[in-house]
Length: 452
Image (cartoon, rainbow, N blue to C red; front, side):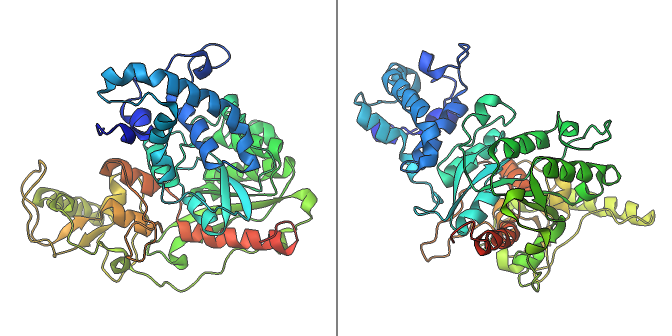
């Protein structure tokens, strides 16, 4: 933390020193007297700040004002603990606290064409896509603390955490246009015969359905892994579709979309589910998923421009292990094992865990200084075998992670590599989401439901 009194920011108190600065005050507590976790306080305040001047921000304003007042009057007593010369004047302190909010590179349009909420938001792939099309996010939720940190660094907003909490749900505004969610696929209870709303209780999808039922937005866009289509012999997907029908939505038959046909060099198949509120009179045939384009990009198009640090290169011991592991499986007739992605090829799907990296090894001989900077067994291989970098993974998902030199904002990666790999691996592919979102918006515009 800088000793400059005007560089004490929300990121400092929210993530670096959340423990020491927890403020115990009736304004920072739930009605039962328990303290509101500081990340939740940050979510309320940053949502209020990002939605100032919009009617959708009204739901956050009163509690946000209480929290800011509590922070302003209480933080002075913590300056010794925090080793920071916090200013006493409330206006200066508030200016200081909110610097990192207003410096976010992707704050959203000032004159939005429509509104949406971002559930199970991850690092904001849905948000990036819908903002590119003129949308304003009016609520976001993501439970992972490291993903919250990346989301905040890029959008100036800390997502709410536990979407199963009624307190969290109480901050979702009314009358937003579209619900977006890359919800986790959990086990569903299929004991009942209706395979509808009641059978989703106990799953996170139930919370998506419950928000749809209560708020009745005009449309939704859900994303999940390809395997959802065949999970439990198709019963899980049937439960989901029946639930959406039951709560008042016309659902377009889901489709598996491959991101590599929409401008990113990654073979990534995901199931998309789109639906419209029944009273709008939209039929399934009114919507069509975007047409696949020719594969237009390859790994070389997203590769780091400069030689990457030696830490991304594989040790000789690791290379030998990969080779032997693959040979064992090949001898048994299996296709498991590492894969090398050529410069002019499309990457395999990036996923969380070692397999996501091992199936996307590249050959890059540009780095000549292979002096180890971390502990490894053996030495770095001299044949150029390396793992892709987190920034390359970000580019494979369509995030603007590189400085193009034209003044365009650059997606920030404020977390360690391990978290960055996880976040990009769990993300949606932005261009494929955006192409589908454009189709959804076109239907709403053609029916004079939205003015775009």
